Figure (tube, rainbow, N blue to C red):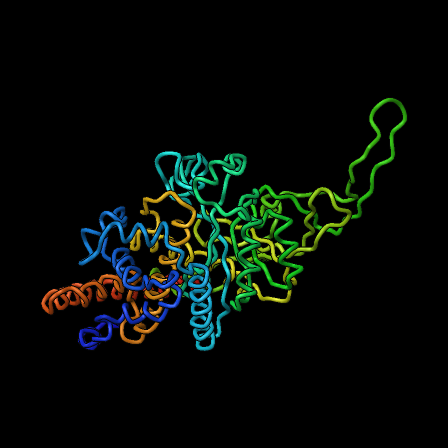
Length: 475
């Protein structure tokens, strides 16, 4: 068993968690100064509020009730009005996260990814900065929400958010009085698409010294020729998802404006390719069984995760320029009878990375999605009740700082407690700081039983998978 009694007895004696988070936060106190006033104590209380408050309740009013010696007005001043160095804090968080995951890479030899993704925060009313009726993935429909574009670092099973941009719909950009009221800086009032914001994040984090091996993201970003070309120019590898209806050429095409046909009609002006285009889902349907490669991707709670992988050269065209770009198309599918299929483009060469490496790049987005779930469910990422631009920036920087701390706890405690979850780490820190010895002991006993059961289920799944594989080999 990975989670036995000895492991939890050792953890009960892990007294460093008592007050440790406050010492950790004090390392960043330089950024919490505004003029001659030190806001570090308020920052610590705000972070405790994020940790303590239940899901849906991590707002300043509830923090005042839950966190000792705290005051709503102090929180409001700190989050909404104070000019402490939020940008400096975010830079420091990004650099620390990069160093931490580079250390992990040195141990596990797995590359570090830089993943772009957007996330929505449902809101009521029209006053919150950037709020609009727009697609909210969290609701699966168009709803009243704010949307942020986020950058995360990921290595193996560890991921954390390190940067963000608030997306401003055109309705906001076209209303300068509304922007002024929300405190949006003048330099941020030009309309920018989500891929354009993503490129800003990439460039900024490279300048900060953040180190990563590839850029990943969903179909919104993979579909952006502008973003892909810009990443090419920067000299970074990308492996970005694309939609199944994307069209490509299977041979490099040449382009020319067709000659005008005799008779009436307009003179052609648009370029036309000399090769046919094919939808990606049509290419998928044409792949032969023998051309799929089965690759082991990682360990999971249900056994080894396998993906079928197919890759080939394709040429992608933006519909305007006189040359198509060569891309490696990677198609992955799960092993179920009705598989889940993904399509991705990369600027890496067809044989520059193996099937397994490309599949690893693509599958790492799973851990980033988990990171957003943790930030929202455990730290109140969406629970804020503020309206100003500065408030958004301040709240998010503290969410990222706290997320980084909890990821570090998971990494540090992995040798003793390999099944320690983000939620486990959060609860134990709260109990060891505010709970009695009996409460800590009781929670650890509960966790021990839960981890033992979980490990038993994991071991059973691996045995069943091994048995199934053996049966397939002998049949």
